[in-house]
Length: 185
Image (cartoon, rainbow, N blue to C red):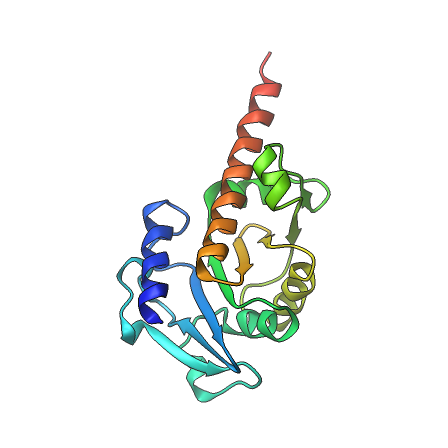
């Protein structure tokens, strides 16, 4: 399974959706999750870059896992997600800073079809508060943007979570350029 995580970690870095040592990836297997370790280079993931944790309770291994482990764990506890990608796509982060009503409505047909709308939530990284807020927002959405931070996208597979991450960034990029063009004299 670590090999699948490695494939999508490399894709995230190659597409500019994360910097190498930022962001994290997890998959759920029954009552366990495999998650990238804190500080792992997502474009160089090996078996040693992944840690297996219980979904239902914290453990001493949480200390070496991603700093967003609590968020991943809570999302798995409260949603049907089987895969989570947390990325830092630049246009999604920019749009989170510009949004006025904490909801981004994609302008492109694909974004409207696959995402409908993208909530922007607030909370400090790696906290119980952010974990709770993210899980609640992801009950009705496939992707959310944490204000000034990045996206959390879910799916039944890593491929789906990656696609949602990519579509979120694409929709935010198009919205950014559209809004910029409308402001030109």
